[in-house]
Image (cartoon, rainbow, N blue to C red; front, side, top):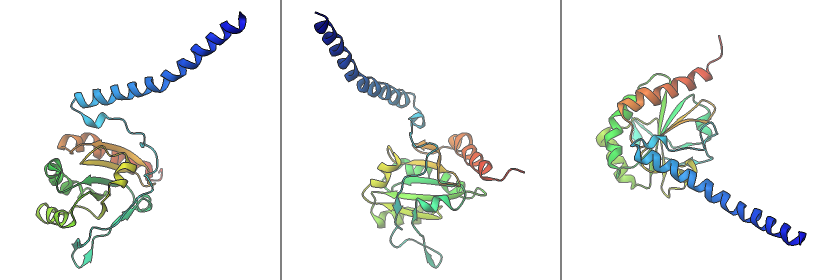
Length: 202
C-alpha cells in the first residue's frame, strides 16, 4: 500500500515538472504581448544587456566609399576598442529606417560617440543608393546578408539600435525606429552613462 501511495506522489511530482517550461514560456509571451500592445516595443526584454556583444563579423558593403577610401565593415572585437559605439541595424527596404535616418545623421555628430551600421538582408546597390540619397552617418558599415548576425544579436526586426560600452558590452537596446524623444530620453543617457563608466575616476 505504501509503495502504491509513494508511486502516485512521485508520479504527480514528476508531472508537475512538465508544466514548469510551459509556465516560463507563457510568462515571456505575456511580456511580449504587453510590450507590443503598449505601443512601446523598446520594452521587449533583451537577455544581452550587460553582456559582451555576440562574436560576429560584418564585412564591408561592396562599393561604399567616403572620400578616397572604402568604408570598412567591423567585428565584435572592434566594438571593444573605440569607446562608446551606437550600432544600428537597418535596410533600404525598411520604411521606418527612412523615417529615423535624419536622426542618425544628427546623432553621429555627438561628441565621443561612434555610429556604425549593419545593413540587413539587402541588395548592395540599393543600400548604396539609400545612403547616397539620405546621407551616410556610419563610421563603419557591415553587411548581414543572410541575417545570422541579427539572430545572434537578438534583433526582432528593422530597425534596431544598440549602445555598446567601451568594453564591448551591450548597455542598451532600442527596438523600432528612433524618435527625437527616444534619443533624448534613452539613447543619449545610455551613451553618457557608458562614457562616464569608462572614464577614470578623478
